[in-house]
Amino acid sequence: MKKLAAEAIGTFVLVFGGVGSAVLAGSHIGFLGVAFAFGLTLLTMAYAIGPISGCHINPAVTLGLLVARKIGVKDAVGYVIAQIVGAIIAAALILFIAQGAPGGYSAATSGLGANGYGAHSPGLYSLPACFLAEVILTGFLVLTVLGSTDIKAPVGFAGIPIGLVLVLIHLVGIPITNTSVNPARSIGPAIFVGGWALQQLWLFIVAPFVGAVIAAVLYGAIRPSDTTITAGEAERALPSEQRERRG
Figure 1: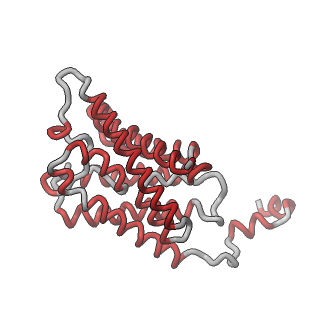
Figure 2 (figure 1 turned 90 degrees about the horizontal axis):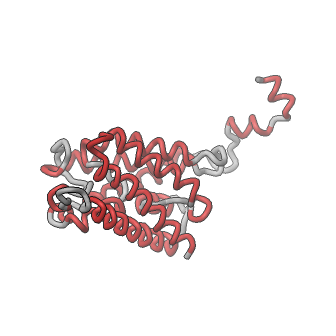
């Protein structure tokens, strides 16, 4: 239960920080600021709740870790439900705050940071282009998660590359789809926008899941076996005197 609570809280913070920055401050910080808001939020959550749940806060990441056999089916289902709940609550509170501005705020009209393709893509990108972008960008994220949390990776640094890759992903993806790579992040705003956002929501569930599976399979294919000694492990195994002489 603590893990599920952590995932709900973490996803709430991610959506509130990321989508909230777009809805409430986007006109001031631009899409560069929004990209960093998403990345920095994920980085901070990685250290805040990572020791509790692993900080998936994204159904696509959970699916990727399931395919990579890093989590069981029962836990994965619970994680995804918790993530969606956290995202919906965050979207509801963002909408409530936005409606307090002079002149109010309409989710149906202004979009509440929802993801879209075609006429609802920021750059009017086609459905196939948006689908492919979401697959590739989600693959970037899941590949980074798997690599940086691998037993062979340096300990304690995973949050940094994961947060930074999410910044990169948003820099590329915001003009295309508003950047999803996270079904929960897409579901939250879409529920309150309704109409076109719900009609197009399928893409922002299917494409991230496809990207996650591809990334997990690719990582499994290129990952060294547990019996293989990497260069970093060999270096750490040397006596301190030899390491100093090499330096």
